View (cartoon, rainbow, N blue to C red):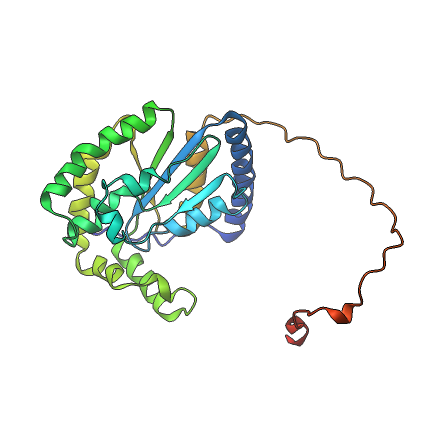
Length: 269
């Protein structure tokens, strides 16, 4: 059954102020992760156009990319289809001191693959049986695993689809598979409920993010993620900017010898 969309939206001014505060905390959290060698894996799943990518973008925005990665895998290659199903995801798990954000994950098998018939019933049932075991192994090995399900109403989803259709910078986000989420809405609902029944475990629970309000969903996600990592505030290493030495007698080549990017900005009114 479709949910009603909540028309109330978080005010932009409040959103931007709180987002900045939370992003400072994310940098603090990353410093602790780097220092302690912690491993953090965050899985983002949910309806198409539910706001997963926007939340990942805001989390990643100011993090050091050397120890924070967003993983969004394409369809498996011919070689990958011959592997153990989880293999290409396991290869991208975080190492010591690293954060990995998975924009969709092995849960593709419980969602789009199952609903659209891309896997067999036997493969689907094996997935539901094995996934809690895999996640138990990850948690037992010390990985901090957080799983988010982004929930969006049918009306809000269609509104976002239509917005993407008119936007040349976001048109690539709208695929034939995405549009099937409209005609197969109830099938996806049943698949999600079955997935939760088997994989919403004590050691790796699902956290649902209500995302009709994109601003609120981003704030709620980041705030909750911070609460799931037992980080401490560590002072950054002291850095002293040295005095710049005076110029020596080196003569640089004439500027005319080099090619410069045209000043297009000067022509923009």
